[in-house]
Length: 463
Image (cartoon, one colour):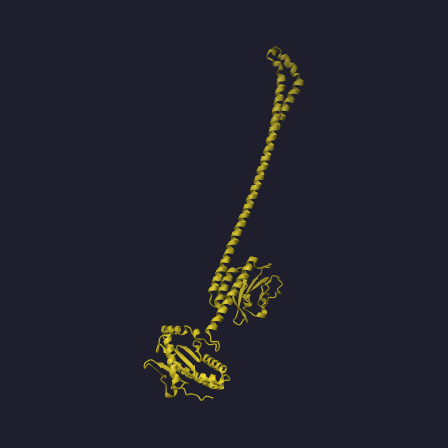
């Protein structure tokens, strides 16, 4: 455009200069005189033609100027459109980048969320397969550590009496500052059964366990079921935030704690039911069902390790007459007395069970027949002596016992129990208040070879 304007101005300038030169020099007059001889060819009209040419050139330059202006406007519009497109494209690229970053964040979030949900599912499966409270504690700590890896965390579980909640696991920067034991009166979560969250940074939190100089935020969640506080999940951080966990994470943790509590409750119920079905309600000893495969297991182990196992069948002498004389309530007291006396005189590995009625069975691992005989003599004497002075017994209680030993007598549990029962029958036939041993050689039951005075325990004078 600038060049077109410049050309137009030059054309006008040349015309004006030529005009003034022609005027000042009388160029037209001289030209007419010079070309008079050639008027026939029209040379005398040349200045007029040049004037028209100048005007034509000026008009041409003016048209070029207008075209240049139009082109300039068009170019300006094009440049403006291109600039707008560039800005729009730049904005689109920025938006695409933001969308890409957002998408990546969402993908990462979904991946972490999926991973946590997978951990929760795996935890539920593992808890469902657990068979004891100790195993439940171990599984809970393991998976909670995967679900809450970024804070200082402690998991505490109750003892059997729900008197103390002990640390089962801890991780994080301040794990060494977590209390190893908490009592009911020391924990608001245990008292109320509700989550406790504090990010006041006052160092005067209601949770004394959290009042450390570096702790600014605390969140505790109960592990409970049906108002039974099985445990506490304690989370702490140095960061002062409104919440240590996001809403979704908090809901997930609460659900996990409730799941753990449910499994603890179910396992405890199963344990109680198992004890109820395997224990004799009156004496607290194992019943015949509770005895289960104990004897079979001991026989197998004895064969592998090369030791003897002795079984003793014990019966309370004349117990029917005791019930008839003093009543069944007193008879129950006498049964409990005998059970307690037998139990407290056994080794940790020995098994005492109520076999039925007034019959008891002892399983004595790593015990020979002669040692079992001496032990049974002692037990019979102890029961007889203690029952004379016990307020739970109306008269002295005497016992009859039969013993059989594996592998010396029999190698199977049924045969061993039957042999001990035959020995018990022989003890009753012999006069009761004594110990008889099963003897394979003569296919009969006899007293263990001892001095005559020791073979049979004398019957005590009853009240």
